[in-house]
Image (cartoon, rainbow, N blue to C red; front, side, top):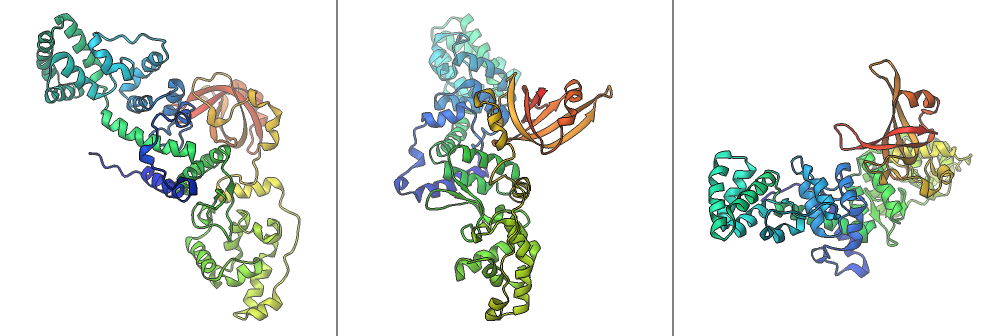
Length: 493
């Protein structure tokens, strides 16, 4: 047995607990879901597998888009094949599934055993079944053959080949065909994966994907809490959650807990732990005070009820920038402008609430922060643009059927067009001394690296600045030595 310490099991547990709270789902049983559920398989076909165990990498998503799985067995096979050795069989597997390559096997007696994998040996258990049925091996003997082949033990393989051919002949097969079959399984066996592992891994993956397809709010609550400190993952999950119709509410001084939670309407509420720059003990103090003495009524009430060590503008500002005090009815700039006045009033009043009431200033109402600045602070403190996104005003410039989201890009696309907000530009010189650049860009669905070679760089250099919104067309490629994808640009506007 393998005992794996998997955060995915925590994610599954959190999601299932959330589902059980829903009135129409109290009898839901993850163990009895349909493993050929089409809505779930659709996620795999589209490569929408962020947060799904073993299917999150860009390489795996690309294979899923090529394979177009329409049954659980395809998921199991993809899981087994996506490893350094067996990967060479993936193009043949895909071609055979789509009828573009014949499913040839050396002998028809193997056809049923290899039918689920289109005539290709993917699993070690298939090696054992062929040895058993074709050559009369016991399953113990078949396991010894599997082990010798997977370890490439030449002496043992040679000895067992004689037993294999003799056993096949005894079962009425031609000796020449027997040698062909042995050669066939020897070629594949060294790459065979343990099917029982592949099924167990894939079943867990399918359960997670099923929840993602049918209970998206519960799924995103679980994965966001698991990745709460990883801003890149959080940004991706939030974009996906919004795209799948989940309502996302920002952090709230009166409604948020530490992590992500779901309210009675099924909306996802960001937690106070999502706010960068807030000390854990400060968050805990706020929640404890709220639970013991009720909701905070306004800015003065909040500051008056805080422990004295937390009555500092630098402690409260992250709450303001993240929008957690918006419910007090004033814009963020006004609350920021008023913090010190309220803090000073509490300091002068000491423990006397009546004196504090007489000293409490009014909120200084000023114009709201410029939109770009407000969004910038959200990005800084929450890791995401919550109340808008810098590219939103530009999305209508190009029809949806003429552009793609970053999340839908796949290796091999030659003329992919995206709209991106530039986050960072890195300029370098080639060995010849020519300038080129790597641009980090993002849209509503994710981030990507864009490569501009010298010729295009010369034409586009003036556009390559952080906070610019660009239209980029180019070829989608795998990044060298990494699992991420990139766009090699051929036009930038």
